Amino acid sequence: MSAGRTTAVLVVGAIGMLTWSLLASADSGGTIAFPTEYRAWAHVKSVVVGPQSQAFATEAGIHHIYANDKALEGYRTGAFPDGSMVVYDLLETNEVPGNIIEGAQRRIDVMVKDSQRYRATGGWDFARSSPDNRTNGSIPADRKANRVACHSKSGDYGFSEFRK
Amino acid sequence: MSAGRTTAVLVVGAIGMLTWSLLASADSGGTIAFPTEYRAWAHVKSVVVGPQSQAFATEAGIHHIYANDKALEGYRTGAFPDGSMVVYDLLETNEVPGNIIEGAQRRIDVMVKDSQRYRATGGWDFARSSPDNRTNGSIPADRKANRVACHSKSGDYGFSEFRK
Image (cartoon, rainbow over all chains, first blue to last red; front, side):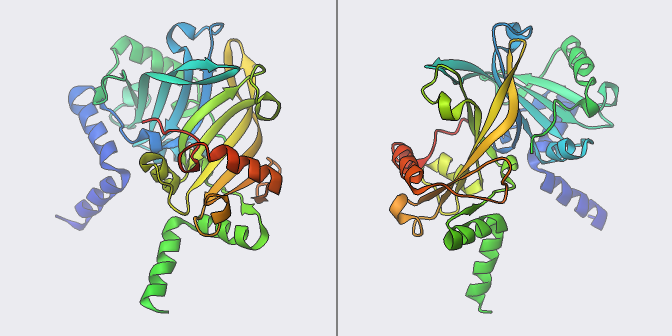
C-alpha cells in the first residue's frame, strides 16, 4: 500500500465508516444506509407543522434537522463538502396541558453530498426511511426530482441557517 | 512533570478546555463559563411551551436540551459522569402560516456535574445566561435550591430520556 493510499484510508476512517458505507451502498444499490449515529450529530433547527400549514398533509408534527460534522462545516461556511449528511427527523406531537411534546417517530429523510457521483442532482442524493426500516432508505425518482427542485432554491441545497 | 501528572493533563485536554475552564470558574467565582460549543452537542429533546401551560410565564417558547459527550453517556447509561454538562436553550417562537418556527434566544440554563464539588446539591451546579452575556452565568441561591428540588425528581438529575 502506497503512502497516498494509506492516507486515503485514514481519511476515510476519520470521516467515519458510516459515511463510507452510506456512499458505497448508494452507489451500488440506489439506497442510502440508515445513519445510525445521527442522534449525536449537531442539531440545526426545529419546526412544528400544525393543521393550518400547507405542509400538514405530509409533514404534520415536529421535525428536527441534524447535520454530521461535514454538513456542520457547510452550514457554517456556506459550502457543503463531499460527505456532508443532513437528516430531517419527523416526529408526531402530543399535547400535555399547554405544551407540545415529542411523540412517535414518523419518518427520516436523509441528504448526502457527493459532488461527482450526484452531479445530475446538484451534488446531493436523497433517501427516506420509515421507523420500522432502519437499515436503508430510498426515494422514488419523481419525488427525488421534487426534492432537488425544492432544495435548490436555497444556497448549496442547505435547509436553513445554523443558529449560533 | 510526572507520568501521572502528564496523564492527568492529557485527560483534562480530552474532556475539553471548555469543561475545565467551566469548573475552574465555578470553583473560584460561583459562576459557570458560557459553554460556547454547546450548539454542536447532541440534541436530547425539544418542547414548545404555549399560553395554556403553567410554565408559560417564565418558559414561553421552544426549548431544546443539549448534552455534551459525558452527559450523552449519562442519558444512555442512567449515570452522569463528572464533567457532564446539559444546556437548556430557550427561544421565542414565531408563527408563519400554520408553522411554529424558532425566534430570538431568551436565555440559556446550564447544568454541570461534579459529584464532590457540588455534593450539597446532588452533584450538580446550575447557572443561567442571558443572550447578551455569553461569557458566564450564575443563578441566585434560592432559585438554585428550586432547581435542585425539581431535577432531583428524575434519575440522577437528568431532564429526560434520550430518544434513539
